[in-house]
Length: 76
Image 1 (cartoon, rainbow, N blue to C red):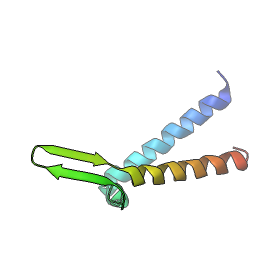
Image 2 (image 1 turned 120 degrees about the vertical axis):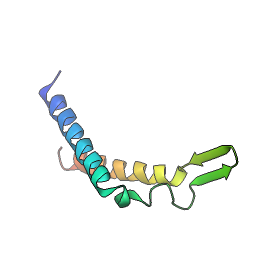
Image 3 (image 1 turned 90 degrees about the horizontal axis):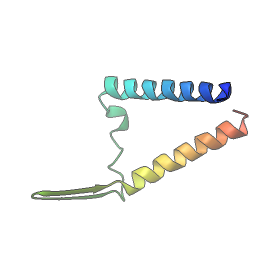
């Protein structure tokens, strides 16, 4: 295993811990919009609940792709 992979995994874990702490301390108010965007499917009936966050997942995918592109572009 290369030391570069270890450093990357450590930084990824640290970033996830910080994100979790922000969500926990902020009560989720930072991401209150997530899952409520136009295009997210929500069907609620008695005894049945369907939730498909299509647009929210698309936003997450675009943001992560842009961040990874920047990271590779800047020599990370």
